[in-house]
Image (cartoon, rainbow, N blue to C red; front, side, top):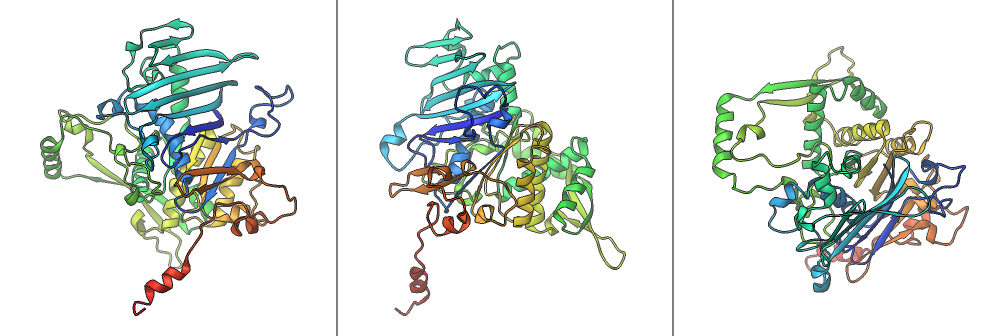
Length: 468
């Protein structure tokens, strides 16, 4: 999959419609010119910069929400008491209004547009178009008000799907559906990397399991650690059996406390505890469409399904002057080492198979040179032969520096600001007057492009001076 654009309205701090565009200026028609490919007509990198709480994460969350809805609205989401959504919460009209999401993408060298509209009651509308030749063709059309549902030109009863599930999510479950392959390709080619501690722990546990199952190799991990030059000589896997007594106790506790109806853990996302931006949206949660996330909750009648009989963990051997090579646990490693592993492994997978990688706060705990290496790898078509794409948010303006090795065009750099009403605004660097020799980093930090905070340092001084 190659993403061309995302359009979203009424999601978290995004009240008004915004569009994030990954196409190059050369794409002026529905298809590339005969001498260009889709890969040459789209960017592999797109960065969003902005001050805290301006909505950078909200944009990525909207994209994540779309793929999560495809992945789970027909399964896990059905167990929630209402439609899972996060409308703009700072005015009553938006809280009650519907939200819309649409992606423009290329799959198997064919352009598609897919989107849906949701409100508190469920799916208002859903649509899918593709471009086999020179005109858009309707593959899916759904409208709640008229009761209309058409798939590949064939009318179907709207009752074939529930009010709160997407047709594409239902197709994901049905191999006989004409939309199954497309739905599967979408959810399989997207990965999300978050910055909060709970996510990092989950990702490291998933990495340990992948190593045990052979899905990831130790050679890959050693190579990624060597890139970072952090002194790690080797990595190994430790497996500790859980005592039977503890397993029995855990099983009994789960039987007692599991409710009749369970929901995915990811649906309770507390912005204050995860470190994500608090942008005024109600915390109804966005399930994670990442490959390691479960397809559904374990049932109370099958408690063994959620119990681990073996705990796996990574251990690291460091270079030393004495000839000894003691092992260290992941808890002994620096935040930078953990951040690099959590980010580099999915990046490597994306570069090998293609698809979309979404990373929030990509510069968190990473040295700028290490970040430059990662971004440059995605930008290099000789390495990124499958045209994997990386969309990220960042605070650090080093990627705009003349010293940065990352070749970013103006169309690949976006800025977020927030109005007095708490509304996120999105602007592309290409929309500003062009200055070929300008220092983009300096201009950004001075506020020319927006996206920088309006600070009040004098308040700090007054807070310190308690006698005044």
